[in-house]
Image 1 (cartoon, helix red, strand yellow):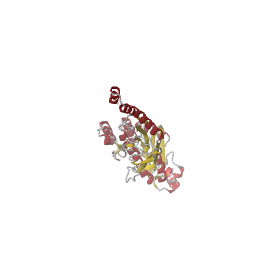
Image 2: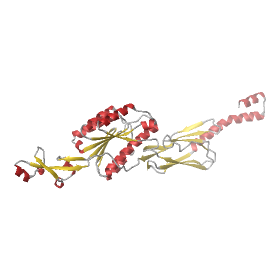
Image 3: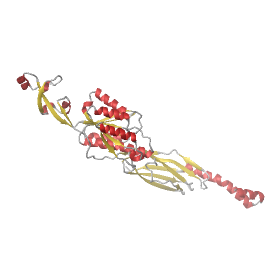
Image 4: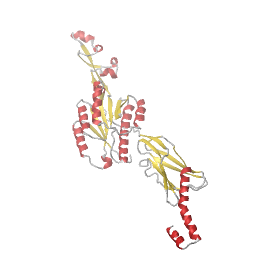
Length: 388
């Protein structure tokens, strides 16, 4: 354009003048076509499933429509959720829509991790044909999909049975009239009058009571750590996915065998879910699928607080197995678990180690874990990788 302007000024000519005006009009016309495309483009998006299980695929369909008699400017789509859902599954490219046509883009998305995701078009960038101008449009509808964790039937969990002998706990699990007593002993304050063996009491001239022994599959108390992680985005998602999946597997194992369990975690406030039979599993499953990580309360202190409350309400004797699911090892957690171990509880720590992903040795965590082992806490390592 500069050369044409100089030639028109130095060498007046009809051709040079027309060429100059055409060059001056090109940006104006190009900008007008750009705004026309911006104003008249129609875009429709949809997903064929909104609730799926981890590992399944969902088809995300985008339809671009041109109902005008003009060619639309090139446009480029940027999708939301592309850090996880669209990774290596969609490559942005320029699209040109010809008159009275439409273009359908179908993107199969493999959902690798559990959680709530919003997918859709984050923005559309319109460019004129000469790449002089561009406009970005952002206010576009998104779709929410819920990815449920996998359910795996575990073969074993370190859940121990406890022999409940001559206590009122027996009455809570069985009817006394159906139990077999193993021995006779002297009456003690607090014994039920129904346990008195009247014939032997008369024979020995003192109150004698029946001593019961029953084997009980004790209920398990599960604490789930949903403290926020501060690693790279995908590492955070992978850790959270494995933590929730571990909890689901454990609850499925126990309820399938009619073992009672109580799950507790802190999300804005303390949340407690209790189940006694396999029909209760769906309630846990629906609650855990959308759980968001990010509370600020220290997990070790939370465990201590909840255990104290259970003891005050005389509920702690109902639980013999204490299970902790976490990826954070802290001194507060160590203090809480060793304290519970002193109460003769069977304590198991299921540890999802971030070191599997970040490849950095965590010396402090290792030292605390070794100390927990020495204290009698059973440690189970749960492996996790980015392709889980």
